[in-house]
Amino acid sequence: MKQLLRFSILLLAILMPALATAYDFEVDGIFYNINGNEATVTYNGLYDYSGSVTIPATVTYNGTTYPVTSIGKFAFYNCNGLTSVTIPNSVTSIGVSAFESCSGLMSVTIPNSVIFIGNEAFYYCSGLTSVTISNSVTSIGDEVFSGCSGLISITIPNSVTSIGHWAFNECIGLTSVTIPNSVIYIGEGAFRYCSSLMSVTIPNSVTTIGDNAFDYCSGLMSVTIPNSVTAIKDDAFHACLSLKDMYSYIANPTAVQMSSYAFYDMTADYSGRTLHVLQGTGDIYRADRRWYPYFGRIVDDLIPETLRGDVNGDLEVNIVDVNAVIAIILGRNTATAAADLNDDGEINIADINAIINIILNGTGN
Image (tube, rainbow, N blue to C red; front, side, top):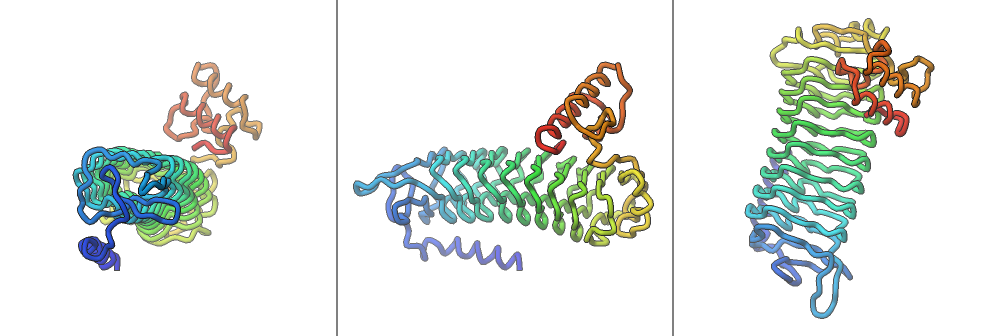
């Protein structure tokens, strides 16, 4: 079905020059359609955008000035010579496949005015190395950055609540990603084949990790799963060949809806994997066949999220705990597990920042 849909879209793109009524007007080499009192950058049927393109905030035609509010479907489709694009703050939406297959596109900044990014908007922009997503975007749609093999890192803003199916599929250059605590859903295949991704901390807001979400992330070495997760779908972490440590803060794993193959590895060698779980829950995980067979060791060495950052043990996280961590770093106090918020085995400035985040935002992420 997926391949059929892809074929249909490509066929439509091939036929577009014959089918389209083209455009309403052209100004400075950019083509537009008129939508009421607004203008949309549109597909011109020629694939001739190249170099750097700056989209204006307004455009004048026949004596009327229109605000440019959207980039339409397929507007820059297959413009291999396009290297950069500047999108004005007047634009609120980027249409389906708007920049699909623009293999020469290297950077794009999505302004704060943009609310909607259509599916496959930057599909297979293989030269894209950096993306800034505006903090007004609420969802990253299906396959938006799929196949962007040159993409090295991306920060997802706190406005985003869901990461769509295959959103970053085959982003083989992606080494790091920051998932904010606004995200509640990670879709099917969202980070599939992100083979350079080494670690992932899933925030304590995510409830569902979709099918194949991190499938074939062969470089992934550590994953942190929060207690908020209630569903881990089929093959979510399938073929994560380098996985060494998983940190699960799920207090009751038996209540989680999950596949028996969520952590399956075709090599069937799980001896090098360690599952770290909350203190006192190890036996529960060991008795659950959906977890136990896929980890060589299960150790209950984690403290509950509610106590993370409570360095002085007074059941509160505040400035006193910041001072306590400073004392540990300076060698005046003995280190405690509660002070190592990022579970890297070290107490340093990163842990101080994490405690400050807890104080300010209620989360250490």
